[in-house]
Structures are given as C-alpha cells and as structure tokens.
Amino acid sequence: MRTWLRALATSLCLVATGVGAALAPALPATPPEHQRTPDQTFLTFPEWYLVHSPAEYAAYLGTGAPASRFPLFSHIGQFWQSYGAINGQIQAWPFNGGYHLMVMVIGVSTTVEYALKGVYERTIGRLAEGLRSGAPVEEERFAARYAQSYVDFIRVDPWYQFDFASQLKMLWRDVPMAGPDLLRKWERRYLLTTELLVKAGYARMIKLGTQTLYDPPKPVTAVVLSRNPAPGPACSLGDVDGSDHPDYRPLGPIVAKGPQLATIPRYEGFTTYAVWLAAQDIDFLSVAGNQGEIVISELVSPAWALQQGRLLFEQPILTRPGQRRVVIAVPIAQLGQELRRAAHARDTVEHVYDF
Image (cartoon, rainbow, N blue to C red; front, side, top):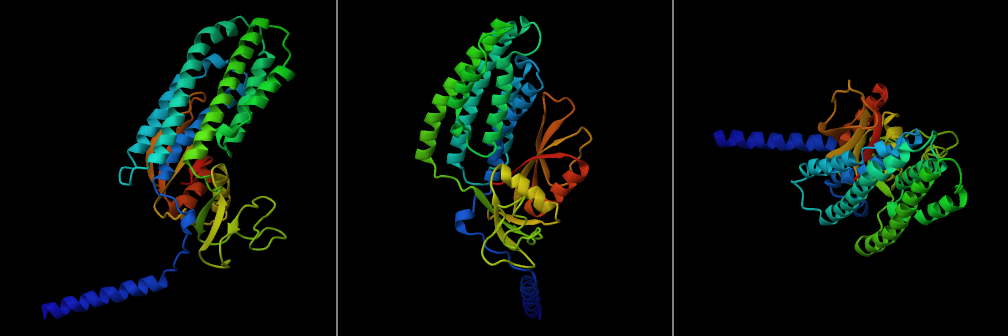
C-alpha cells in the first residue's frame, strides 16, 4: 500500500508539473550568437568605472574647479576596490581569462596614468595654478572640452578609437599661445601635449592587440521582453517609435501579445533603451540569454535604501559631497521594476551592465 501511495503521489506531481509547464508561456530562445556568460554583467563594472571616472573628471573641470584638487589617487582605489568586490561575486562560474586580462590591462594602465598625473598635479601643476592671476586660461578651458569629448565618445566606442591626434592639432591650432598668465598657459600646454601624444601612441598599440586577441563585439544585446512596446505615431510594430528609439528590433516573428525576442543597443544605449522600456511597464525576462541577475549602478542620495536585489558595494562620489554610487545585482525579472522605482525616487540610473 505504501509503495502504491508513493507511486500515486509521484504521478500526481508529474501531472501537476506538466500542467504548470503547459500553462506558462515558453520564452523565445535567444540565438547562440547573442548569448553571453552570466559573469560578464559583473565583470563589466570595472571596465565601465573607467568611463564613470573620466565623466566625473570632465564634469569637475567643466565647473572651472582647479585640476590639482581632483582626487586621482582615490579613483585608483575605487577602481581596484570595485574589481575586488566583483571578483568575489563570480567564483561560481568558470574563470573568464580573456575578460580578466582586458580589465587588468586597462586597470594597470589607468593606475599608472592617474598616479603620474596625480604626482604632477600636486607639485608642478599646483604651483603653476597658484601663480595664476584669476580666471582659468584658454588651455584649461580646452582641457575641459577635450575631457568631455572623450567621455562622450567612450560611452559608445572603445577608448582606443578616440582621435587624440586631432585634439592635439586643435590645441596648437585653435588655442592662442600668448595671453595673460603665460606661465600657467605653457604649463597646461606642456601637460596636454604630453598626454595626447602618449595616449595616441598607446591607443594604436592597444587597438592592434585587441584586433589580434578579440573578435569585434556585437553592438546589440538580445532581450526577451514581457511584451512589445507600443508603436509610436506613424510607426509599425516592427519599427517602434522610430523617431526616438530607432534601434529596437524584434527578432523573428513579431508577437502582438506575450514575450517578444528583440535586440536593443549595447553599452550606453542599453541603459537608455532599458529605461525607455521599463517606463512602459515592460519587464525583462532574459538578457543575452541569461535569466539570473543583472548589475546596475545608481547615483543616490543619503536617504536611499535597498528595495530590489543585493547591494554589492557602494562608493562616494568624491567631487559631489552627499552623493554616492550604489552597485546592486537584481534578478532580471525585477530589472524593469527597479528602473521604475529609481525614476519615481529621482535616483540616477548610471548604467545597466548588459553582459
């Protein structure tokens, strides 16, 4: 009797499981060429910190603040802190040698750059800055424009493709060599010329090595969404809101209701499109073939409290007292919910790390 009851219970469980599976809609399969390993959402944070740090630097220079006061040494510490914290989260997956190599190369090179620049700014730079009579010189204003152009570029494209040589030509062609505070002008011109020359040469070397070791990355990320976004004016379902978000592309058959497989831009564009989709109450079911966790960084006020997912670590924004960066891992199914919460709370979604 006991054996018969056990068999009956097992049969009922199997039937219930089958019914549940039949009722749950199957997710569209992400094509193999669009799949990426689950550890990459974590590993991309250290890579993107080297976008966030120059962005903070550019914003700082844009205010006219003295370059010698920017906390370059603290930014070195934040990069390696983030890399260590991320490494602690990915032990369950196979070692991603190629990605770790890339992060180490950019991390070490940035550490050397920031350390040398930090020493210079705290000595020669600070002395020349102190001898300046008043407003920033033209070379300082050029440095702020160059820093912002660089950040705008690397949000979309690899840093080594930036045209440092053109910036050097503009410095010597467009910025007057004479004028007030001549000592500060030529000190800044020397620093900028040295930086641009070194970076132009290093960029060529890294570009050659990258092309040799790595295949060109796909510029899009495949996602499975809870539904298609609503068509914009004069747009078909396959060309949703072409005026503002033209790079949303359904993959395979277009589904009027239910889960939709599509591609959206990668890198900076992924954050923009993810916020746009979440604002329409659309949820993510899969990203790059993954249904586990995805990493988000947000810039928040002191009153912020964790509501979704896990807090991985946090960092103060050193040039903006009272603001901090929180880095959290949320289940992909809760990504849209977290983005809507951030919008409602007026927290800034700095980046969604799309594998």
